[in-house]
Length: 384
Image (cartoon, rainbow, N blue to C red; front, side):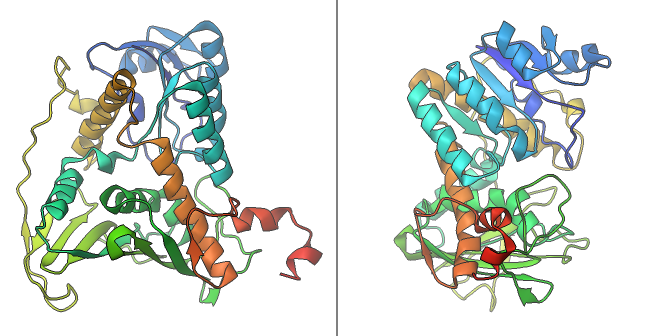
């Protein structure tokens, strides 16, 4: 399969997850081109991704190339939609960094384009490919913690805590809830900003370009299928030296928990008592039985950071799964429809708080109320 890489190194976000390296060394892959507006010394970046040709824009790449798959590698959601739309209209499949796009309406359009043009869109929600979370799901389904009762998730809770944390990092946590239990049925939420409930006109400055964001303190309760309750929480400024981001699933016979630290161990408590009363955890051994036949060993020197192996391995599994999904005519394990569900959950949080009631899914109003209010005159907003 011919792969095109869209990775604009002049528009850097906070950190990188290695999406541009996902297809490197996979069997049956030709990295045909790299599109990057940074024209200084492109040979070095071409060598890193093993691209044969270079283009200063993704539009010029599409004019000259006919890739089977395009990798959209920017972590800035505002840069995704136009590339995905152009790819889908050319019948090109997509591997996209999370979040899928900026708005729920864009996500609706992406899903429509994918279906209309018979293309597969995979999203880099890497937890779905990670052995630790796949094992968690298997143990839940095998009854290792009895009947699952509650899914607890929290974001990183650093300087972005609250609304920005939800959009940037909470997308992983909310997607894990969908992965483990299916799309939620409803949500009830409260969002506060510096100690008071947010209103439609509230805004918070963000570290990266994002759609309107509000809130420094966010709490949401979801109802998942099977009477499983889900909780997502993010509060600004709680991160110190211990990683808070992660998930815990509590059941009638125990708990399973994973923190997003450098080790990302799966921990299990066999206590039937609630986790806030008694939870003595043991580490669950993980056994990897997957392989990519004919793949080169990954080059660890290209993946810096404490969680290098997590991103290195799971990006490759995600890319390989997309290739198999294309051949097998199925949805990828982490697909656009589920990514849209996660965006719907985030939009539902704001809607629930601002409307002061439980919100059922699927959402009838597909617009983020913060985005809507930004376009209304003050005289209209003040009457809300």
